[in-house]
Length: 155
Image 1 (cartoon, rainbow, N blue to C red):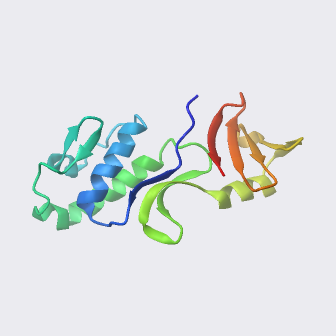
Image 2 (tube, rainbow, N blue to C red; image 1 turned 135 degrees about the vertical axis):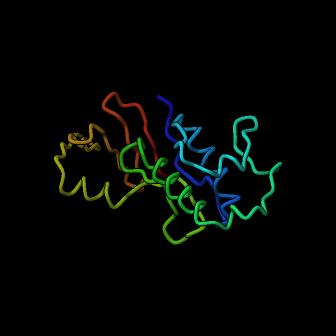
């Protein structure tokens, strides 16, 4: 299994013209379908392996419309579907312009504290999520499936 990639997909901008191509490209990377109601795809093109607005009028009134916000909400919802355990798509805590895939450490800590946990050496097995968590003495966290394939790691 390929390790899921945590991190930023767009940083330093809140312009829909910048965010929408990044969100659509991230959805394509996840091999998830684009929701059929996304109007923004009419204002972009797929070049290589990513969406772009480069050849399209970025000043079109669509980018300031209410529809673009609906599209953004639908894409964020789509990006949050089918993610690995304890991961969310959204803004990085403390930086509202850094959108990406981030570990949900609050949920992970809650599951380790209150969930059905089996301890084995330096590992914790979260039975209800079918995952193994390794936390090093330096605070590094590795989340694996039950076959010990790394799903994501944070160092």
